[in-house]
Every structure is written in structure tokens, then in C-alpha cells.
Length: 192
Image (cartoon, rainbow, N blue to C red; front, top):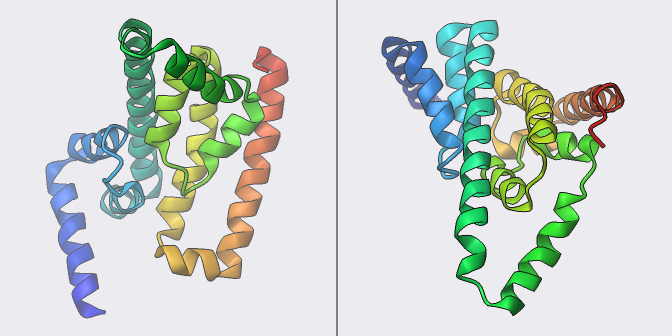
């Protein structure tokens, strides 16, 4: 356990010395490289910069990273993807993404709020499916808050998080709050 604590202290000091931009860059980069551990980076930002600033840096970075990734795949699919696929493949791709294109705003917020949802995959699918920018941005702004709170404050291993009843209750409450907020925002801004 002492080795783990020493490693966490080393990583926290490394991010602290790199500054806010370094903490921001790690989270931003994770939106493009799904092998990077978002939960670890968020926890380290919270340890390095404090709860509010660490979560704020992480929230801005992940929202910006997800949006840039979404724009990239939206552009890529529009300009290149369909040119290289046969008509049968285009039909299959369209059937697959059509259901995601029709996802409600509230359900998209819930998907994004889940701590273990691969954000990179959501960005790709939303970009290719051409989910509206307004809907995508609003959903990441709301959903990422709850996902980051989970990673910032819970910061437990996958097994502990799934088996700890307190964590399950916290996740359930955060998802409920995210869903209620998404319904309110959806009605106010006509996002369904």
C-alpha cells in the first residue's frame, strides 16, 4: 500500500509542477486516445489542484476534447467515410447509426454521465451520426459534470466501485439528477 501511495504522490506532484495546462492537456488528450485512464487523470487533477479547480479544469478539458473529436469525426464521415464504402456497407452503417441519431437528449446525457462509458466511442458515433451540435454540446456539458464528480471524489478501483453500496447509491443519485436536469434543459431549449 505504501508503494501505491508513493506513486500517487509522485504523479500528483508531477501534474502540480506541470501546471494547470498540463492537467488540462492530459484530460483533453484522453478524448482522442481512449487507452488513457480518464478516472486517474481526473483524480490526479483533484489531488493536485483541489476539488473545485481540479474538477473545473477536467470539465472544460473533457468537454472541449469531446467536441473537437465529435467535429473531427463528423467532418471525416462527411468528406471521406462514405466515399470508400460500398453501397451495401453504407446501408449497414446507416442502419447502425440511425438508431443513435434518434437518441433522445435525456438518454444521451445518461450515456455520457455513466462513469464507464467510453467517451471516445460516443464522440465517434455522434459525429458520424451527425447528432446536432446543440444537442451534443448540451449533453456533454451536463453529463460530464456528473461523470467527473464520480471520478474526482470516488476515485476507487473498478471492482471497489462496482461492489461498494455507497458508490452504487451515489452513482444512481447522480444519474437521476442528470436525467432530471436533462429533461428541464430539453424542454427549455427544444432539444428532443
